[in-house]
Image (cartoon, rainbow, N blue to C red; front, side, top):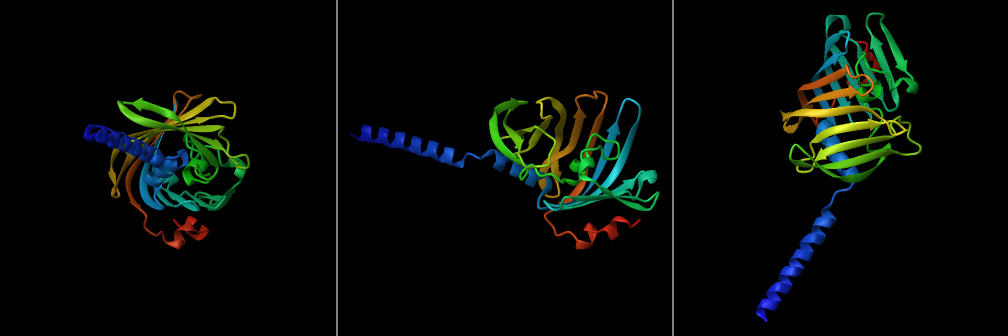
Length: 252
């Protein structure tokens, strides 16, 4: 009888653990929320380096970035000298660029949000985070895979019918054990792969462990690559209200 009871209890314990595991299984949206919070926090104030390479030329930009998710963003170019002072400001769905060479603030229309930012393979939308992968898309776990011997979620983000986004689908590969993003694949409305964003060099910055080198490669331009390197950052601290103003945009 004791053996029977022990076996019965063991089976019940296994069932309970199984049910608990199912209850704790994350949704696709929850996985991507963890990725977004890891990369950006509620706020981020950071220094980045952008390297743009094409078959004809190459250049490097030093950037200072302030982001207050999900509403406001500001990007300032620190170097090279020819582009120093160029800035991009986004508040809600509105975006402005400042060009110090002509001392002009230019409002960017919605139709231009997917144009390349400063000749890179990142768009205006990418740089200022105007569209939201959490709010403008629905999400589902498409499966799991193994990347370099580590299990990863495959999460598909599909645009909501009313969302003003261009991608027909965005597929994320996210490491299961710590929600480190591995790759993002961007597909057109016709299902064609358009570009791939890959994440490398996981290390500690600003008190959190995250990938610090991001590589964007457009499929139709095999010689092009834009690499963004995170140099330093502070996360989850209040950002001065004066940062997100057109007056600040026009400062030298």
